[in-house]
Image (tube, rainbow, N blue to C red; front, side, top):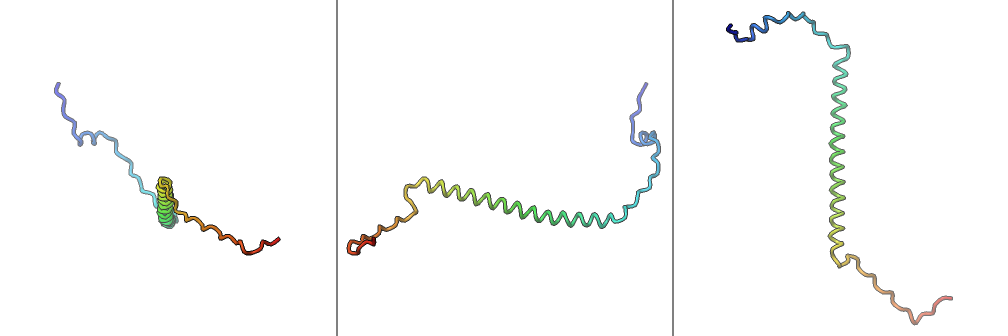
Length: 96
């Protein structure tokens, strides 16, 4: 017995007919809600960008400070200038 090859036309012909469905109308106020949510999402997007930029900048600042501290720790030279010694007042009497 020889089998026939299946083709799309035969497969579609064997399917039951689909009932006609009427597409429902959008509910009242749907466009206003979608537009409002879109605007809120845009505000949140700009806030998210600002937060990401601030966080990255803060991390870069902390990393730069830590790097400078490590570099400074490796050097024996201090950046602090020693204070001059107070002059001795041998000619003035001390208050009692």
